[in-house]
Image (tube, rainbow, N blue to C red; front, top):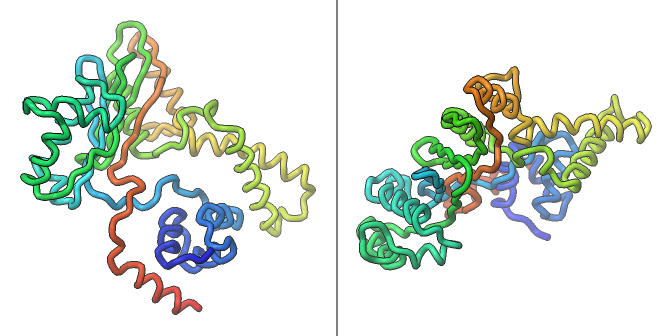
Amino acid sequence: MAFTAADVKTLRERTNVGMMDCKKALTECDGDMEKAIEWLREKGLAKAAKKAGRIAAEGMAYATVENGVGAVVEVNCETDFCAKSAPFVEFVKGIAQVVLESNPADVDALKKCPFPGAGLSVEEVLPEKVMSIGENLQIRRFARFDQNTSVSYVHAGGTIGVLVNLAVEGGIDATAIGKDVAMQIAAMNPRFWDKSLVPASVLEEEKKIQVALMDNDPKMASKPAQVKEKIAAGKINKFYEENCLLQQSFVKDGSMTVEQYIASAAKALGGSVKFVDAVRFEKGEGIEKKVEDFAAEVAAQMNMGK
């Protein structure tokens, strides 16, 4: 399978590995992106493959809670200038209100719902907004919680929107706890909420990578296979600490995990809090914009390295 300069750029962004190593990985793996990521990890070049690709699209991720119901939405536009404009921000907040009030099943159903204060449906308002704002607008995704206690957090004016759902007992106000957890999710972007949610296949792949790293380490390569397997199994806790929210070190206090922070903070308030679920939207996540001339720049650098 052939690969392009843009593929090398994407692999570099997903792994933080140098361009020439990315080119070599794609060559070795016949252009297969996922296999190239694994190849780089096995060689010890990529410490962790990023889950998301390049963040390129503009727009806003927004989360809010009203009357016990939480909503988080992402709406995209074409430019950063538009994303920061008052008319666009108000439109995004209006879409969040539709999610809160109408509980649509999906984006298509959302477009059939009434837009607040307009006397029109979302799909009837959308073309008017496109004309008045002057850019193409896309309602990409949303999520909604109407059970338990929800807490919202919006980072950097809409770069990331997080909605956290907690089971709260004892009549306490868990808003501060929820906000701290939401900020942790925004900052660390964990792959899983809890270690119990990690599929066996993922753990096996991680053990395989750890063994491969030892195979490529002169100090470890000669050790018996069963010893390597045992060492790899012992590193799984480190995997949990890096990839699972509740097992992560709490950003505000590294002496405890997020799970320990939640329990401790709830106890101090005289109640109990358990993490139930969360949604994290990052604007433009996984959406590619026009590459402009960057691919040509990468290609030129690749040719220099031949």
